[in-house]
Image 1 (cartoon, rainbow, N blue to C red):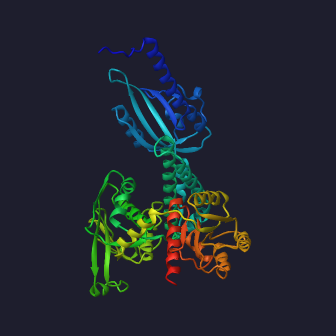
Image 2: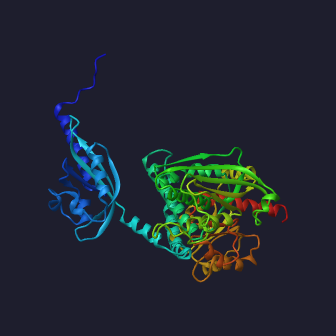
Image 3: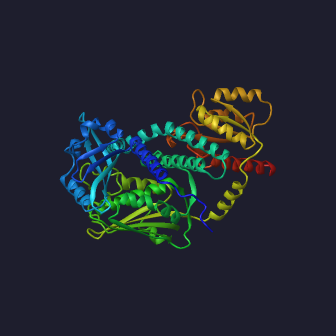
Length: 529
């Protein structure tokens, strides 16, 4: 059969190519990253507007010059030699460079330089794309310079509330929008990326709070093998390509009841410690297994209770720990690293987190033969029933009960209200405790559950719950907060394990928590408790 499709004419092909070229031009011109093209000798032939905006050099000032106009004097000569050796041999260079703007200001970029070749394979040009990471570097330096755990704790605790509220708003409205979209399509994929990014930002906040010992524990039954596997990519990025790490998971590993974010922090700190002990590369082996500690073990470690534990070990091939340093490695601010290379908080944080989760840590080492750290966490054997309960809740996330929502952050309150109404609940809303008392005084029907922010002007959530308990004894209470644990507990006797959600939480997580609490209340009332 003849081909009925008309072939494109030469002018049409030319016009299509021109359109593509125009689009590519706009991509480069409008890119937020700095784009610079040089000839094969490194003479600048093109810079995009982002380059002009950040460096202060106009296109006319830059073209015809070399990258030396940005030289800061703070970069070692070896890096430039490595750069040129890489790109002249046809490779792609990636690295972080310290540059200087026209006004003398220093800035940091994550640089990628790619050779361009002609049809004969000869290098004709180089294209450099730079991402400004100055703000990130400044934050890293601030954290590295911090000398006290309490200082970091106050800092992270102070920003956690506002930051968590912002993340709550972002993720909540993204979830609401997702529920309105078809199951497929680009808009849905974009919104999922927003939700994922907000979750990653929330994880970062939790890690900072854990570092400062301000983290509100969210206890759950964990599979340590799964936690290690899911943290693997992050561990590899932290250690670098010159360190090979291996995971040896134990069979039929018991569960542990702990805070996931804190266990991830333990893994990160152990990996960072191993990396620093192997400056020229090496091996790290992480292993898990079930162990039984009896009375004979207690003779060595008097604070250890006999019983079954899940043991996680981290063994490196590094420089090892000297006999005189070994007794001090878990002390805060004790470090054998050069000044400016560490504050001595990593292993102290590991020790504190493990103890907070009911376990203990031991270390052994010989100089030049590496070090081994063993984390022991009490085994927990109710994973199956916990999973079944979670699945039961998953099936039904809506209801018809009446909920009193008290939240002083308007955007958080509105998103939560809209979602709960969508699930079928009747929602009464108030901006603070005083307004909540007025509303409940005028509302003659029953209120099944109170959702209250812990910290609010005039009257906090705990005080409000106490006021309402006399007239509404069967009302369940769920506290929420973006503040750190110490601040939350200062506002009343709040059970952070059973009736508390730390912001930012997903709306689906809230729905499951509500059903769990309301169904428990219904079964308790039916049983006469």
